[in-house]
Image (cartoon, rainbow, N blue to C red; front, top):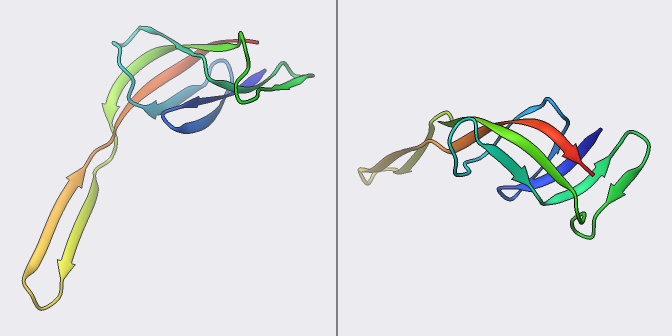
Length: 103
């Protein structure tokens, strides 16, 4: 059994028991998270595809932790002019464990 959900502007294929890293969502570790934007779901035999989402389908998960990703360095440079700018960015993420898929 699997489903394709949309969260944070991305589409992710999930199965029960998967741990997925998604864009940060509000909540504390241990909170129950429900994803209503289910694009497609399969029970192993039949594949249901939404237009664009499946009605009455949801994916339930539990928030494991919030965190920051690896640092990305943004460096701007103009040769011979003495112009340099260095910036760092760490994207926030949430780690979610998928518990159930209701088709």
